[in-house]
Image 1 (cartoon, rainbow, N blue to C red):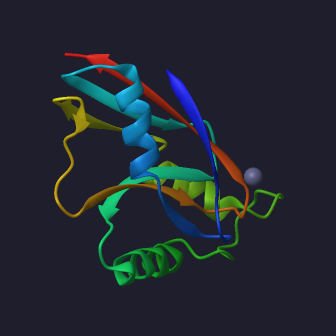
Image 2 (image 1 turned 90 degrees about the vertical axis):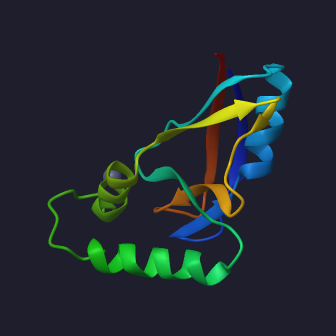
Length: 131
Ligand code: ZN
C-alpha cells in the first residue's frame, strides 16, 4: 500500500487523481491485478467520472448539491452533515483493473477525489493486488 496527499480546491470540488493513482500502481510493479483506491475520510469520496469536459464535473457537483442540500435540517452539530451523506452515497473506495502494468480505464474515465468539506489536504491510499 502507498499513499499520496492531494490539496482540494473548494468546499465542494473534484480533483483528478488519475496520474497519481497510475504512478502509485506502477510503483507496485504488478503486471495484472486490481488497484484499490481508498480515502480515510468521512467527508470525501472517490469516484470514476468523465475527465474530458469540465462541464460534466460542474453538472455532477451541482446535481449532488440539489440531491443533498447543505441546509437540510440535519441534527449533526458540526454543520457538515451534507458532506458526510455525500461521502457515504458515493463511497470511499473503488477498484480499477490493472493490465500490462497500467490502469485499465475507459477512454473518458478519470479517477477523481470528490471533496465535500474542503478545501483541505486529503490522503489517498492505493493498494495493488496481483491477479
Ligand atoms: Zn461532521
